[in-house]
Length: 308
Image (tube, rainbow, N blue to C red):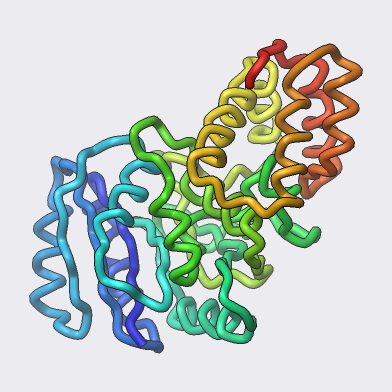
């Protein structure tokens, strides 16, 4: 079995060696590692080149990236892959994979029957700059469905393993405009197309928290407040509109999920009563009570913006 791993790098010299080693130590299949290097000013490229020379068991395909928004970088990297694989995985430059990471995810996906898009994702074990464990990412209980995907990203790309049907959805994403989050979009498209998403509560990725993180773990009351501020500022609305454009561009929703999408989209239009009506009609939900209240609150405080 051959597996494609996608990694975008940018000034990752401090930690990338540990991540590369953890990829080499995976206990399943043959790995083709696709690396998009985005104009690093440190020793990232040199470390990768040296690792490639000393680890012939991994085929490293090294590409010069366009140094765009991180999500655009990953979608463009995916579009550059012409070889067909049974499974694919995203990877971050400063994390560490447990040896069972790929094996566990692929094993779960192989148990699912039928030809459809499949995605495995999970919680992460949080570590600090020195690799010390400092906690876990938020645990989600509710089952991952399209109604959740429309309004919430539940797992980082660094945990995602997916099949070729899901990959085919990924490469249909338009990279001509800024993509909010490639992992969130993949969750939306896989679940919306009638595929299946598995969320595993047991982490196999050590997710490093440091001052160079682009996203971070989103844990704690402070981060909840920050997300609420984004709602007030209209940023969450803009995220939605960007996702709407991509959903319509890919055009892969089932008939039922297209109805749900149209209802949710209508919750951004009209007066307050119509917006509330369509929000509840859509059945969308976030994983926590706090998140669901924030979703409802956004209907009252988000500026009206009519969209077609």
